[in-house]
Length: 191
Image (cartoon, rainbow, N blue to C red; front, side):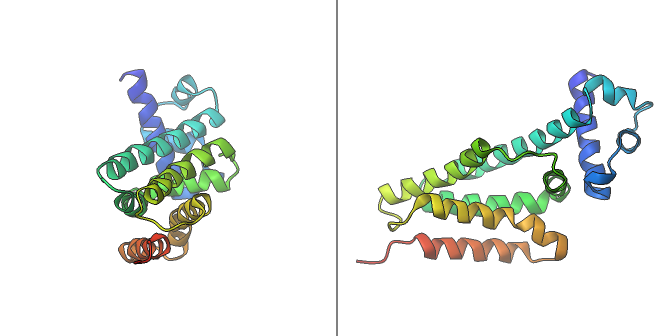
């Protein structure tokens, strides 16, 4: 097995273990067992320690979200479509990648994913750019794009928390309600 494939195998096993037992209960022994490794030294060979492994897990999940969203949003031709695709895509990703999202949530809540204001501004900045484009093109009414972008981001980020307490939530309805809420909130009134 190549080094990249082994690292990927370990990251995937770590995601599964965190999603199953929680961040506080994750151990190299559990990860090694899940990955089918003969020794936990294989984890130590590929990662300098638990912090590096957890950082790799978070980066992997965040990168997969970014790739998924780039395809969804990039397929749209106007700002309203991009905003809808962003909201629906984030909800869909959360639903179809529950273990990955739960692991990311556990890492964050466990204090292992440090808040980075620069990263936060990048994520909100993408939504804000969509909103500004919609305003410039006359699709959206006048509002503070940063405030609305932050509200959109918090609304979609809240789904993993909600799924913890309501695992059988109708996520399609959740996504539709958010789309409707933000379409009504950004829509330009007829003249």
